[in-house]
Amino acid sequence: LKRFDEAGAMLFGEHVRKLTDALSLLVATSVRHELSRLSQMAFLLNTSSVQEAVGLLLSQLASPTSTSASASASENTRLSHAEAAAVLARRVEFDAAELYELLPGDEHAGDEHERRDLRTPR
Image 1 (cartoon, rainbow, N blue to C red):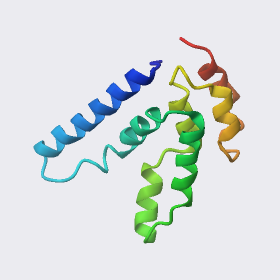
Image 2 (cartoon, rainbow, N blue to C red; image 1 turned 90 degrees about the vertical axis):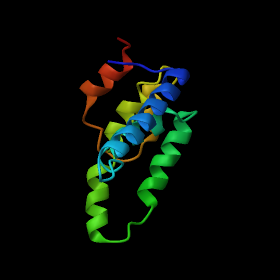
Image 3 (cartoon, helix red, strand yellow; image 1 turned 180 degrees about the vertical axis):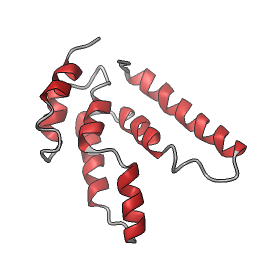
Image 4 (cartoon, helix red, strand yellow; image 1 turned 60 degrees about the horizontal axis):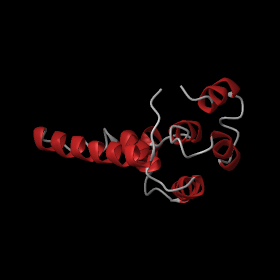
């Protein structure tokens, strides 16, 4: 699996923005919603610390949604805690054990196999 350092995360974020902009020029509808999960991944990879990333995730969960339809659509495009932790574990500077310790909830508690895989570099 691909691992990122700070410069790689910045480059990945730039590529995601360029892809979004280029696709927006090619199609009549907005592609931002379609690429929102990828954008979230790039955003998380570009945080400066595990604590910053966890703070952003917690603030995202606390933000209210305006309607039930938008809440449903938002839930389908938001990264889960386990997905966010897996993305953040791709940063070589971040400690996977710290990620799982700081992310609240038990959504990822039973996924010991995935945790082991994230802790060992490939």
